[in-house]
Length: 270
Image (cartoon, rainbow, N blue to C red; front, side, top):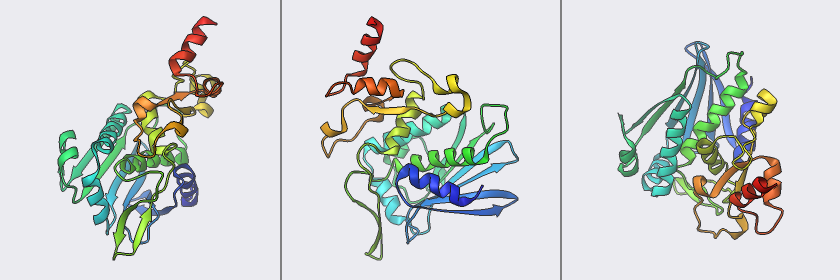
């Protein structure tokens, strides 16, 4: 696996530029990924396989991340709730989570209230996959790096407007610009809570198609994006639902779309 493959995957998924490099640390091939920024102002994810039995991810702020840490401290309750929910979803996937803020472990309430001057997060999963089959290195590193990036992007400003989330010497800054959507963070939060089974008909792509169907599903906005106001903050649990392509198409057979419960009733009556 080459770092360029991981870089391409992250850039396509998040619609953001990423810096990715590969280094050898203590005999482990490690992949370091961070959203591109000239001033080292954000966070970096280090991902590696340890002893062929566990995937390890370490997330730390970059050297000039003061403005990002201030932004995390000021994050509203919705962002911190999403962060906590994402942490809990990782734990439900048998991921061991070790989070320290300001040099000590903290609980959910402290996540909401404390001032973040520094942090360190370590995610570990044993076994690497749920299958006894040999794992694909790219699939494992890319998937869990994505999860780690999503976890901390939960705490940062992501909107349909260009917004500064950090400044260095008053001039350099990173712009995070996503349509309030269609944010991949909202998608991951939805899937972390609801899984990859169609929320209407129950279809499971992996159960039917095996490994090629793993982690494949559409995510539908219950309230159409065109009807959402610019200041609306999407609740991934209430506003989004995983659906198979067939149900997704049927939801949009009228405008505004059918509600999920309406389509379930149609299926039940047919």
